[in-house]
Amino acid sequence: MKRLFLVFSLAFLLLAGCTTIPSLQQPSNGVANTSIANNIDKAKVSEITSLFNDLSALQGGSPTLKEKSVENVQLIKIVYDVNGNSVEVYVTPDYNNIIIPNGGKALSKTDLKNFVEQAKKAKATQGTQQTVPDNVAPASTAPYEGNGSVTVIEFSDFQCPFCGSFYANTYGSLKKDYVDSGKATFYYMNFPLKSIHPYAEKAAEAASCAQEQGNDFFWAMHNLLFENQANLSVDNIKKLASGIDGLDTTAFESCLDSGNKSSLVSSDLNTGLSFGVTGTPTFYIYKEGLPSDKESAVEAAAQSVGATTFKDKSGKLVVVLVGAQPKSAFDTVLAAFNN
Image (cartoon, rainbow, N blue to C red):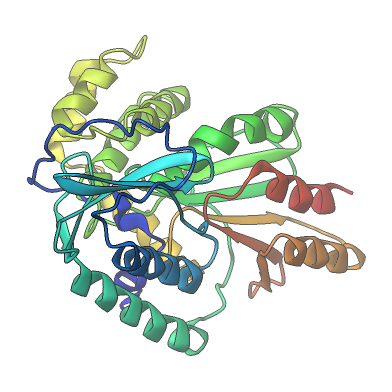
């Protein structure tokens, strides 16, 4: 099942490559409102925005992009609001090529249209391809935090902008309110989209190399990787590792250079595919031994926040949240499990 090619949750917003972006001025209007210069074709800008949002709607769970500002600075700069965060996209003057910052390579508008068409086909066939997992559970090697009765499994990509948005806006408060308080156990599993995020797989290996020295070292590296998404080169990851107190950097670098963790990362990805993951971040939430009379409340809570539910072959009810969900979505679902 070639599901890896069907992952289109706008993760390509941080495509990496060798093209550099010229130094450009920040918008003078503070990007609070849409500002279209006289020499910018608003209709063509709207067409590009619509293509991004078509992908968002087809994938599910991703936020609608809204133009915060548009200006012509040699390249045309569009700033999108993504869950309160600004994401910059540059368009060539002929409106035919799209360039993403942080060393991003050009993506033609034709490529973007092709992505939309492939996503439509994937959406149409998803129901026939989906199989019910035997037993949704984290890998035995998956790093975790907490020891609560509700399990949350995140499938994530260290280079994915929406995974970064979840980390920046939701992860901390979710950890404080549910993991640290003993209500939930949070697991992290890798789902690197290496075809569009070429640094993601090595970043995942780096986190696993840190974990080899202890669970706490994994989470320290996890945090640093998300806080430094703009530069996930191997050299920079090694610099980040040197700042983790107590980490044996010699052993870490040897592990990272060896590629020994690539099979573990691939195993996580294959597990995600078997569960039905099609984009990042995706969260699987369940409670072992949930009484049957509680299931309807959990299903209603999931539906109210746009989540889906299914029962795996072991009979366990699982809630699936997709995208950079706000804390309130987790509050609703976790409250239903804990009531």
